[in-house]
Amino acid sequence: MYALTMRFTLPESTDWSKIPALMEDRARTIYRDLPGLISKAFVYDPATREYGGNYVWESREAIDEFLASPIIAQAREKFGEPTYSVHRIAAYLDRGQVITPALSEVKGG
Image (tube, rainbow, N blue to C red):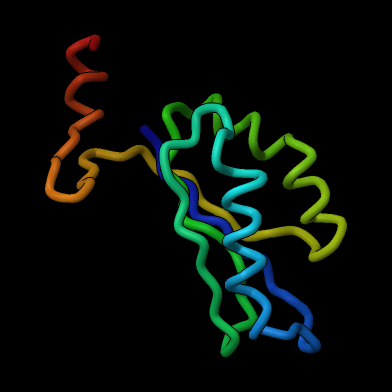
C-alpha cells in the first residue's frame, strides 16, 4: 500500500463555497471505482488556496497510472503543476482495524 498526497493551488477568484459539493460530485463520478484506489480524503484550505487529496493506493503502479491519467492531465491544464509526494504505508488504521501491508509485503503475502 502507498499514500499519495497531492495539492493544487487554485486561483484567488475561486468560490470556496462551491468546493465541498464539487468534491462530493467528483468522489461519486470519478473516484468511486478508480482501479487501485482504496481511499481518498478530499481536502481544501481557502487560506492557502490549496485543493487536493490524501489517497491510499493498492500499489505504486496504480499511483503511476493515476498520475499519467486524463484526470490529472485535465487538472494540470486547469490549475498548473501540483505538488505531491508518495510514501509506502507501514500501517493503516480503518475504523479500528489495523492493517499492516508492509509486514505482508516483506513476508511475500
